[in-house]
Length: 292
Image 1 (cartoon, rainbow, N blue to C red):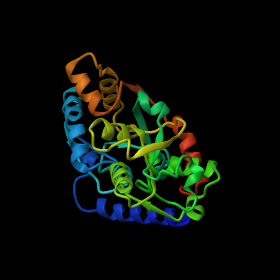
Image 2 (image 1 turned 90 degrees about the vertical axis):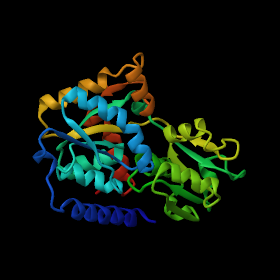
Image 3 (image 1 turned 90 degrees about the horizontal axis):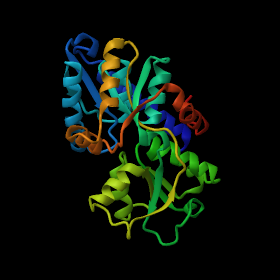
Image 4 (image 1 turned 45 degrees about the horizontal axis):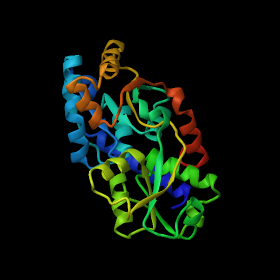
């Protein structure tokens, strides 16, 4: 799929999501006492729910609000949900944050990110013994994750272009699995020669013995870049923004609750973040033709 076709797909998905969220119903700003939260669907919905529940309970106590987690069907829906005030807070990847920030004309505020997100990385994996470097992907098949994924598409594409490999012309076929764990499954199942995904999901799958790293191996790890963050609408009450930010920053792995939440979020701790941190992601997206 060419960058232009990819962009058209993203716009079409965003338009569809706009129609979805335009359905009748109370918007987040009209639901007093409720904090509506979602996350980009970079893993299975059941896994996202499992990971969020202890954090949701913790934020409910910290804010005095009822915290409702609403899964979305695709990345575009998470962007549209926050922009159209159907959601109050979203776990974004770097690229989806940039999309939301650009589309809302700067009306999205990133509150915190994991310390790990300051130098996040992607991995390229394969079962093909002939593949050892990015240049070896020429004339091979490759799976990215979601089209809107920072670590599963945008940054891997950027590093491929840096290696003088254009995914749209130099590879035999490019596909999109929709999620990081699905990319691993596609590679392990022989559907593609290689795949690109976020290093955190890869390490989690290896630790859980859901993938054999001797069969499916990492052949390239990217340099670090800023990635995920928790963002809110900029029109959220500043006092509430502070409560949420402070709650994240107070998480400590030395306490039982903090340890559980941080382990589920695959974080050592949370740190403050700002929109300026994602300028390089925005530049990469524009350079790849994925953001106009």
